[in-house]
Amino acid sequence: MLRMEAPCSTSTSRSVRPSLARPAPCRRQRALTIVAAQSTQPYWYSSKAINPPKKGKHFLHLDDFSKEELMDILEKAKLCKAKFYTRDESFKPFAGQTMAMIFTKPSARTRVSFETGFSRLGGHALYLDPNTIQLGKREPTKDIARVLAGYNDVIMARLFAHADILELAQYSSVPVINGLTDYNHPCQILADAMTLLERKGRIEGTKVVYVGDGNNIVHSWMRLAMRLSFEFVCVCPPGYEPCPSTVEGARAAGANISVTSDINAVKGADVIYTDVWASMGQKESIDTRKIDFASYQVNEQLMALAGPQALFMHCLPAERGLETTDGVMEAPYSVVFQEAENRMHAQNGILLHCLEATKRV
Picture: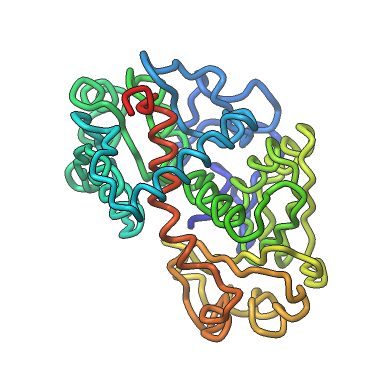
């Protein structure tokens, strides 16, 4: 899960964080004025200026949806999971529909969960790998958006640059689903929320503590906290904090968020969450990160500090022995594989909501 970097920074620090001043445009971050928030905070991405699809809704950021809409998505996910376990072959809300899946960042889980989920509910998913699509290289992203929208009912994209998902949505006449960008990972966090709801019976009133790099997982949890009332804490070593403008924007919207380097903040958590220390594109810095994150491993001692009520979550893939231990992964309080399965069901809930497909159920 790639952490975001400031686009034009000349800093030599090992963890580059965006400043609060608006940066000048540059090649590494093709910011779009049509979708950028009118703010001095360059990384508070907004969907307000995005053209809506002709039918349905884009899924770009969790706070694009109201509390009621998010809970409706989770109810739809619950329905999809129930139909999956009863093998209800009459439940085919996506019958006759096609989904284009754009991947510039490879992933087994994202492809399998979307493709399997959509096909099980009657739809057909088409995988477009990085060499085939060459987003923004072979032809402009806005052209690809309009071409694919002419063939398909929905577009799912797993990308590096967040600006690319916003440009796809701006020019697509069908819903665009954010399968992951360097800035956020909303599908994963809804799967996590579904898992939390299943295990604790509630989301609101809980305490979720993330331990590790302040990356796209953290940004999505923060934006979920803008809509659902729970406490979110990011525990990370100095220099690896999440995007400052996302923290400030979420707090301004009323989210209960804190960022600290104090590992004792895990006490009383309902969920302890972690992710890899070095994401795709960061492996060359793993030796440095091993030193920086050494005190932030989610091990049996940390889980004991959190308390017996704490669940363990990880978005996977995990590097056992680094950010967490084999013992924690296999412990009774670990729900990582329940989370992984719920990716498929949560994504089906998202698709049902955004495609308005339940009108045909």
